[in-house]
Length: 279
Length: 245
Image (cartoon, rainbow over all chains, first blue to last red; front, side, top):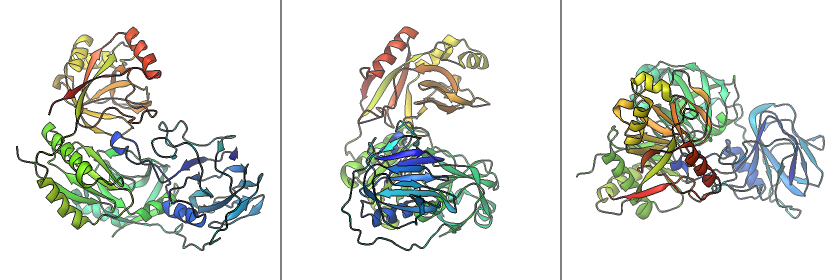
C-alpha cells in the first residue's frame, strides 16, 4: 500500500487507458504523457500498461507501507525520498515507512510515479484509469491508500537512464485533421504562423489556447474525436482534446497532434507558449 | 439499393475515418452499422481495433499499431464492395419511461409558451415520435437522438445550466436526448427518465447502441419513484423490441 499523507493538487491512477467503450461515449483516459511513463515502466521491467500515479503541478506527500522499487519521470518536481533529493528515471529501492514528497515544480506539469509491477487498484471497464463517473473518484485525497504488491527481490537490468528531455520543446507536430481542407488560407496561415499560449482552461479533458484565429461558419455532423484532435470553434478558438476528452464532437477537426506532441502538450501549463508544425 | 459512396481520410497515425454523404439519414446510418459489423466480424477482428460510428462517419482506431493509410484505404474500398448480404447488426427499439412533472420538467412551461402549445401537447409530441440514436458521445451514454417532431423544435437555452441532474430529458433544436449523469447543460429540460442509461456495474454499461430507436412514454411520479428504486437494486429492465431490418 501507498498512503497519501497530503494530496497535492491533482493526483490520479492511470494506466494505458480504457478501450472498447468509446462507441458508448467513454473517453479513453490513461496517462497523458505516454513517453515518460513508457520509460518508467521500462526501468521497472513492468508491462508497458502498468498503472502509475499521475501527479499534476503540486506533488503529494506519500508513505510506502510495503517494500517495493520505484521510479519517477515526466515533470521535474524536486522530489525527495526521506528528505534526500532523488532524480527522475532512476530505480530506488523502497523500505517500509519511506516517505516520498515533492517540492517546487521546476519543469513540465505532470510527474509520474511507478512501482514494481504497477499499482493494483480495481479495474472498471477494463482500466484502472480514474475518470468520474466511470470510476467513483476523480482524484486521490488525503488518507487514501493505493495498493500494490510488495516486492523485494528485483534486480534491475538498468537502474538509471539519461533521457533526452522534451520538457523545453514548444513545437507541436501535427498532421491534417479530417476538416483541414475546409479551412481557408487565412485560417491555415494563422494556425501555422501564430505563437499560441496555453490558456488556464487546461486539464485532462482538453487544453484551450488563448489566441483565436479567423472565425468560420463550417457546419458538420457530429463525428468521432480522439486525443490530440485540435477543434476549431466558430468563434476561432482552438481546443485540443486530451485523454479524458469527449469521444465525439461537432466542431471542425483542423489538425491532429502526433503521439509525441500530445506528450509535449501534457507537460505544459497555463501561460506556456506553443506553436504548430505540419509534418 | 446501391451503397452510398464513401470517402476515406487519415486521422492521426492510429485511426482512419470513413465518411458517407453529409446528411442525416437512417439509410446511411444503417449502411455504416452494417459495414461496422462486417469489419468487426470478418476483417478487423483483432482486439486492437475499436470503432466509433456517428451520423455519417465511422472511425476505425488501432490501439497501438500505426496504420498504413494507403493500404487500408484500398482494403476498405474492396471490403465495402463485398458488404453484400453479410450479417447486419441487431437493432432494438427501447421504450423509456419519462415523468414530466414540473419538478423535473423545469423548462416544460417555458417551451410550451414559446411554441404556443399546452404542456400536454408538448408531452404528446415528445412521446409521439420514434427517435433514432445517431451517435453516443459528449458524456458516457449521452445519445444524439434524431427524429424530433418539427413542431417541437426549440432553440437551446440562452444560458446553459451549470448543473442538470441525471436522467434529465432534454430537447434543443433538432436534437433530443437524456443526460446520463449530472453535468452542465444547455438543453431545455422537459422531464426525467428513471432508467439509468449508463451503469458501470454492467458488463455492457450502456444498453443502447448507435442505430437503435427510442420511444418515450409518460409515467406518474409514483411509478417513476418505483422504477428508480428498482433500477438502483438492478432489477428494472427497460422494455425492448427487436427491430426487423
